[in-house]
Length: 153
Image (cartoon, rainbow, N blue to C red; front, side, top):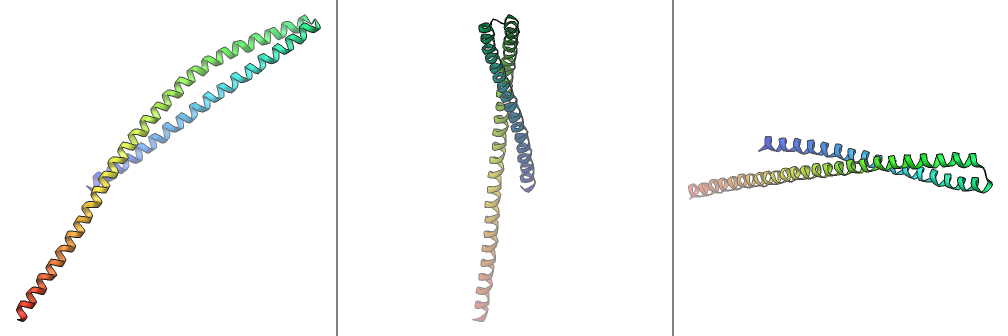
Protein backbone atom coordinates (compact mmCIF):
# COMPACT_ATOMS: atom_id res chain seq x y z
CA UNK A 1 0.00 0.00 0.00
CA UNK A 2 2.86 2.40 0.79
CA UNK A 3 4.36 2.42 -2.74
CA UNK A 4 0.91 3.01 -4.19
CA UNK A 5 0.37 5.92 -1.81
CA UNK A 6 3.73 7.47 -2.73
CA UNK A 7 2.92 7.07 -6.43
CA UNK A 8 -0.44 8.77 -5.96
CA UNK A 9 1.20 11.52 -3.95
CA UNK A 10 3.60 12.16 -6.84
CA UNK A 11 0.64 12.15 -9.25
CA UNK A 12 -1.17 14.72 -7.10
CA UNK A 13 1.94 16.91 -7.15
CA UNK A 14 2.24 16.49 -10.93
CA UNK A 15 -1.40 17.38 -11.51
CA UNK A 16 -1.02 20.38 -9.19
CA UNK A 17 1.95 21.56 -11.26
CA UNK A 18 -0.04 21.13 -14.49
CA UNK A 19 -2.96 23.00 -12.93
CA UNK A 20 -0.63 25.85 -11.96
CA UNK A 21 0.72 25.99 -15.54
CA UNK A 22 -2.81 26.11 -16.91
CA UNK A 23 -3.70 28.88 -14.45
CA UNK A 24 -0.67 30.85 -15.63
CA UNK A 25 -1.92 30.42 -19.20
CA UNK A 26 -5.36 31.71 -18.23
CA UNK A 27 -3.82 34.72 -16.50
CA UNK A 28 -1.63 35.43 -19.53
CA UNK A 29 -4.60 35.21 -21.92
CA UNK A 30 -6.74 37.38 -19.65
CA UNK A 31 -4.00 39.99 -19.64
CA UNK A 32 -3.81 39.80 -23.45
CA UNK A 33 -7.58 40.35 -23.69
CA UNK A 34 -7.36 43.30 -21.29
CA UNK A 35 -4.49 44.74 -23.35
CA UNK A 36 -6.55 44.64 -26.54
CA UNK A 37 -9.56 46.17 -24.77
CA UNK A 38 -7.35 49.04 -23.63
CA UNK A 39 -6.00 49.50 -27.16
CA UNK A 40 -9.56 49.57 -28.53
CA UNK A 41 -10.44 52.23 -25.97
CA UNK A 42 -7.39 54.29 -27.00
CA UNK A 43 -8.46 54.10 -30.66
CA UNK A 44 -12.00 55.05 -29.70
CA UNK A 45 -10.69 58.11 -27.85
CA UNK A 46 -8.44 59.00 -30.81
CA UNK A 47 -11.45 58.83 -33.16
CA UNK A 48 -13.49 61.05 -30.81
CA UNK A 49 -10.66 63.54 -30.58
CA UNK A 50 -10.35 63.55 -34.37
CA UNK A 51 -14.11 64.20 -34.71
CA UNK A 52 -13.88 67.14 -32.34
CA UNK A 53 -10.85 68.51 -34.21
CA UNK A 54 -12.70 67.98 -37.50
CA UNK A 55 -15.68 70.01 -36.33
CA UNK A 56 -13.37 72.76 -35.18
CA UNK A 57 -11.63 72.74 -38.58
CA UNK A 58 -14.99 72.93 -40.36
CA UNK A 59 -16.09 75.86 -38.23
CA UNK A 60 -12.90 77.74 -38.98
CA UNK A 61 -12.99 76.77 -42.65
CA UNK A 62 -9.57 75.07 -42.53
CA UNK A 63 -9.93 72.48 -45.29
CA UNK A 64 -6.40 71.05 -44.95
CA UNK A 65 -6.82 70.40 -41.21
CA UNK A 66 -10.24 68.89 -41.85
CA UNK A 67 -8.83 66.48 -44.47
CA UNK A 68 -5.99 65.50 -42.13
CA UNK A 69 -8.43 64.91 -39.28
CA UNK A 70 -10.67 62.84 -41.58
CA UNK A 71 -7.66 60.70 -42.43
CA UNK A 72 -6.85 60.30 -38.73
CA UNK A 73 -10.44 59.33 -38.03
CA UNK A 74 -10.47 56.70 -40.78
CA UNK A 75 -7.15 55.30 -39.59
CA UNK A 76 -8.41 55.07 -36.00
CA UNK A 77 -11.58 53.32 -37.19
CA UNK A 78 -9.56 50.86 -39.29
CA UNK A 79 -7.21 50.08 -36.36
CA UNK A 80 -10.18 49.68 -34.05
CA UNK A 81 -11.81 47.13 -36.39
CA UNK A 82 -8.54 45.19 -36.55
CA UNK A 83 -8.21 45.32 -32.76
CA UNK A 84 -11.78 44.09 -32.36
CA UNK A 85 -10.93 41.08 -34.55
CA UNK A 86 -7.88 40.42 -32.40
CA UNK A 87 -10.07 40.84 -29.32
CA UNK A 88 -12.50 38.17 -30.53
CA UNK A 89 -9.63 35.77 -31.28
CA UNK A 90 -8.09 36.35 -27.86
CA UNK A 91 -11.45 35.89 -26.15
CA UNK A 92 -11.77 32.49 -27.84
CA UNK A 93 -8.25 31.58 -26.77
CA UNK A 94 -8.98 32.81 -23.26
CA UNK A 95 -12.13 30.68 -23.09
CA UNK A 96 -10.20 27.65 -24.32
CA UNK A 97 -7.46 28.26 -21.74
CA UNK A 98 -10.06 28.61 -19.00
CA UNK A 99 -11.73 25.33 -20.03
CA UNK A 100 -8.36 23.60 -20.10
CA UNK A 101 -7.57 24.97 -16.63
CA UNK A 102 -10.91 23.78 -15.25
CA UNK A 103 -10.35 20.30 -16.72
CA UNK A 104 -6.88 20.23 -15.20
CA UNK A 105 -8.24 21.34 -11.84
CA UNK A 106 -10.93 18.65 -11.96
CA UNK A 107 -8.33 15.96 -12.70
CA UNK A 108 -6.15 17.14 -9.81
CA UNK A 109 -9.12 17.14 -7.44
CA UNK A 110 -10.07 13.62 -8.52
CA UNK A 111 -6.54 12.33 -7.94
CA UNK A 112 -6.45 14.19 -4.61
CA UNK A 113 -9.69 12.49 -3.50
CA UNK A 114 -8.32 9.09 -4.46
CA UNK A 115 -5.12 9.83 -2.54
CA UNK A 116 -7.10 11.05 0.49
CA UNK A 117 -9.30 7.94 0.46
CA UNK A 118 -6.34 5.59 0.27
CA UNK A 119 -4.49 7.52 2.98
CA UNK A 120 -7.58 7.33 5.22
CA UNK A 121 -7.88 3.57 4.58
CA UNK A 122 -4.20 3.14 5.39
CA UNK A 123 -4.64 5.09 8.61
CA UNK A 124 -7.64 2.95 9.59
CA UNK A 125 -5.70 -0.24 8.82
CA UNK A 126 -2.73 0.97 10.87
CA UNK A 127 -5.08 1.78 13.74
CA UNK A 128 -6.59 -1.68 13.52
CA UNK A 129 -3.15 -3.28 13.45
CA UNK A 130 -2.06 -1.28 16.51
CA UNK A 131 -5.27 -2.21 18.31
CA UNK A 132 -4.85 -5.88 17.35
CA UNK A 133 -1.26 -5.85 18.63
CA UNK A 134 -2.42 -4.20 21.85
CA UNK A 135 -5.21 -6.77 22.23
CA UNK A 136 -2.71 -9.60 21.61
CA UNK A 137 -0.36 -8.23 24.28
CA UNK A 138 -3.24 -7.86 26.72
CA UNK A 139 -4.47 -11.41 26.07
CA UNK A 140 -0.97 -12.84 26.29
CA UNK A 141 -0.39 -11.06 29.60
CA UNK A 142 -3.76 -12.28 30.87
CA UNK A 143 -2.93 -15.87 29.88
CA UNK A 144 0.43 -15.55 31.54
CA UNK A 145 -1.19 -14.15 34.71
CA UNK A 146 -3.85 -16.90 34.66
CA UNK A 147 -1.19 -19.55 34.14
CA UNK A 148 0.86 -18.19 37.11
CA UNK A 149 -2.24 -18.15 39.29
CA UNK A 150 -3.02 -21.81 38.38
CA UNK A 151 0.54 -22.84 39.15
CA UNK A 152 0.42 -21.00 42.47
CA UNK A 153 -2.66 -22.89 43.62
